[in-house]
Length: 480
Image (cartoon, rainbow, N blue to C red; front, side, top):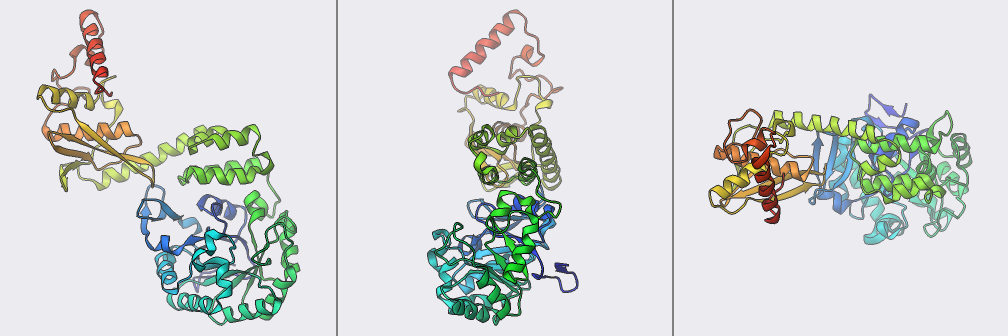
């Protein structure tokens, strides 16, 4: 077992792990790797400064835990399915900040890892990543602080140093901090994937310490299929194996049943991306990595041109799955909002709010609350209503505030489109003011053409209504 239910601590002995990869190790890829047989999954490296600013949010719609930045970006998203298997990897060069982030996430992850191996500027700037390899005192300070400060296992991932002796000495020093395991990428920091992995270095390190060593760097040259994983383990003498590129190209490499067609894998990945509202550009990036040399194929070009998960779904013929998922999420969102929000006016600063949704089916064709509010404002010789709409990046829902007679009105419920959000704001205003809103069965108010409300289109009244609409369009104020 990789997870000891008695100690509640993840074990790193004899495991196969999805390596941390920037832009790849997000929730859909991690869940897919677990489905195919990975024992442990690492998230992409997340920088401590950015994470320290995040708030932990329980997303009841997606059934996830989100760590949300001040600009509403979701920096890290996880769920119950992976809680006992996911390792949170951070980029850090500061012991106190590292501990702050680790304590923020420790209840939602199985372990915390410090990146000490990434050679790219994204990671090395500020002394993080592979830059830490030249500062063993700081390495020790960070790891000791984490080991003493959190309840979950602490690990780190390094690259090998210029000499075998230096590498062994560093890992022995790391072991003394109390970490649970060390992942060793068998390349020097200046080497890239085209360079062969140094299995002899990993083997020597594994023999020199008692904690589990996780071998990394064997993709392409040594690991192409699942059966190669064990060969790489034996070649390095390591306790465990961590896969990056081989898993990025086809995460079914973790399956003991053998590789699946990449087309099947991509569809399964996309379903997770849709289910968990993954950022569309991240979804696109991961799919393009799986396409590899087919990225310029008709499918690849369609994926590259897509701007939303809906458009990506069309490329894979998953429109029905996408729509069904959106309907399920919206139903869950509506149920949660209606259960938690009052249906009476409440002041939020200078804005009057109510829990109101715009239901199109409750109104006759081409009749909307916005039309009624506009006509009432004209009748009262007021300036036309002014709508200000914002979009929430967390789930891309919309919320609108309408200003009428210098007073503001807003629905507390978020809508799936800008138009619906504006209609909901109009409803709040109309209801607070006691003005008809045009619903089916509502007594006629005379604010909008009666014959239009009833759907009758004979003679002069229809012609008059068409002129009225044309006039509204000229004034840029009509919006059904």
